Image (cartoon, rainbow over all chains, first blue to last red; front, top):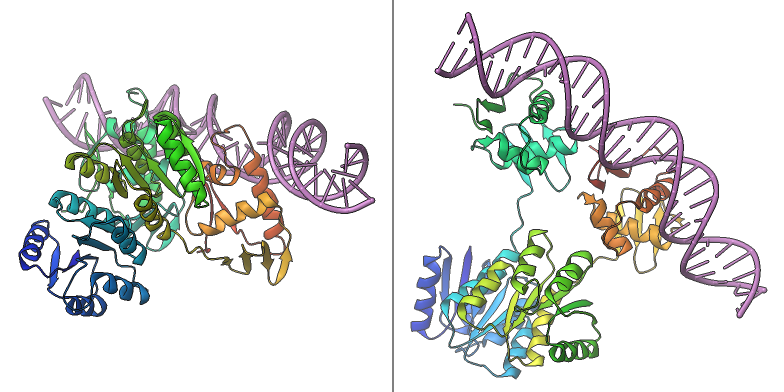
Length: 223
Length: 223
DNA sequence: TTCAAAATTTAAGGATTATTTAATTGAAAG
DNA sequence: CTTTCAATTAAATAATCCTTAAATTTTGAA
């Protein structure tokens, strides 16, 4: 994740850069408004952290310019301009958050994360070898050909695939897929593993769902 | 735009409601956490304004529940819990903003607008294959020929079309189109799916609205 | 306001599909 | 070799959906 800091007080800028880099963000710093606007418009960032009072173009002006060019990058003000009027103006100009100095770094970080998580789409497609599962459409494909799974089959396969590379115990699976706790005498799981294998492994001799005898099942790459 | 206020201090709740209604928002108020969670999960809001300390379910718990159910509705905390730790916790639980009491109404309003402007821009014309739906004129066309849909039929078709390519669960649909919570025994949805199919799929053998048995329905391109 | 038409909901039977149960066969571990 | 757990199959049960029709509610015109 790439963050642009536009801040003229070099001490604060460095403090922010170090703190954010510690959190594994990739950081660019602009020490004046013109440079900030230039970077903001010519490069792509996941978030822009913006002071208001800057030499050259002001933070407010930068915000307006960015929004004018229809960019949706989250903008977070970080400024000493702390009046109600300033705050409202900053937010109305297009900022996504407005933090007043002095600030606490942990809160800044939390607020940055809020902005970033909005832009992340959760992966809805799980894959294993030539099989893909899409939770949004509730479809499973093998080599591009759709395989029809029932509700239980889908939910069982989804659970195993979600935990690809890890053994899922029988109880775990039953608890999650059947949504009940104990049913030692039921062989539904066995039957459904069988259904799944028939539908998914048919065609080649691949053993996608492996049995860990006495424990449960696992989907993993073959050694 | 519809806003839910969850706030147990009735004075503040009324103040907020009046202020927001003056801004032409449609407002629901819940005076305790359980009611708040109930409304939040059974109805659809554009934003939820949340106190933390509440009788019954806490605001934090409500936030977690909403996010757990995968809802993206913006949540704004408005609370007297003003420590750094609280703020971070609230934001990490899934809130989009965190405003500390005492607050200024104009800032609250500006921050609400920030959240709401992110969610606008719904296209007015939706299309699928030879079918188009226009929300502004409330018309549906198939091959240029108008199909008359009733209010419910239109709203159901609109919901499915809006979510084209994604499975809509029966509960989701009922919640959105019928605006009620639970009605497991009602077959209205089935009946209306039937109506829609008759009107929209007539002519060719296309199966526009596909059934995902045990889950719900989906409109998607055929493979 | 009243009445008729239209829209919506409820209800029920039949058809289809999903899920569980049960019984048998097969395979691995001690 | 025996025991235990897993795989497979078939059959029974359960759940869901589709369709039709009738009952109820809403709407809009007279």
